[in-house]
Image (cartoon, rainbow, N blue to C red; front, top):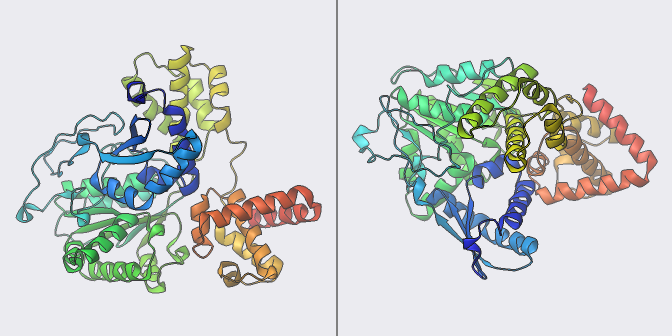
Length: 483
């Protein structure tokens, strides 16, 4: 039977497939690559999926499609061929100009985006390069991520002001805060600000390209394969503003070397560079020391965890948008205040809480009250606001305690005197920080997330049976929190 006529039938296994992917690759990477992938149809032998751009289709096919097929087989109990297509609704976003109105379109509604012919090279001034067949043209932008929609508080006001100052610099003027480097944990607004810079920069007449690190890697590799590497390099080096997101994902010696040359060429040529990552420049250990030094020489700004007042402002803003889209959805002020006090560490956590209230309200017909909210989001409530612990703090504490070097913990050595401290450090990183398994793996010498997962499970099992080790780890936790 073809289940395409029954959209609710495949939802449960598909939701589990997405959840498995989210856990394996981390929230930020999942959002970048899979948040806009939809299940279109399911037959007895084919799973039909769709994404909004050709770039996403190509990348997922090359890197993840076999894994998606494997997870589907495990979750549904039946192996099927997985087909991936491009949805027509997102064919080619319009190139923004200063006079062009910006329509905010939710990517999940799949409403067509009005398009215009791409400008000629001579008309390139003032355009933001978003998508298209040419991989050097940039990564897709979410039209909702603008300076106007960014909620400002104490924890992010400096990052917001610096990003806006950079974006509003007129074409031809000298760059400011160059490079501008933003860093924060997942869900605190890095990508929002970078995409806002890309849009506003174009509106102020600057040729702007927004790229994720993975798009940069994909573009460079594709250019090498098609013998167009020189054109790829020239394109990037003749723009006014280069915006690169998720710099922590940039890997490979050749790619890092090319990135280093591009960065130097742009900075030396007086062109603006804006970057973001999940750690400080000095902690990007997979990058050449010269690159890290150059990044640290600009303006480095941290987006701190959201304070309660800011969480409440964000909730009010997001709730207003939901209320406009869903007639009858009402959340009393005490409920919003409860969510601001109790839920999550990031804007995405707050989105998840509101979406859960909306689902409860629509599916059960129960009005949103404080009692209903406490029950609906009980799995999202954080017990306390833990101190922000850095992986570097954990590495230093563990190395000192076990009398090994930091380099030993990050090395490939597998002697017993190094393996156990390394596994304990990974366990503490998972326990005390908000880093995903892939992020922790990168910080531990570029290891795979499965290595981190093995270490966490092993130490977790030992703690349950070895009281001495459990006490030892509690001591290390206190030392890391106090550092």
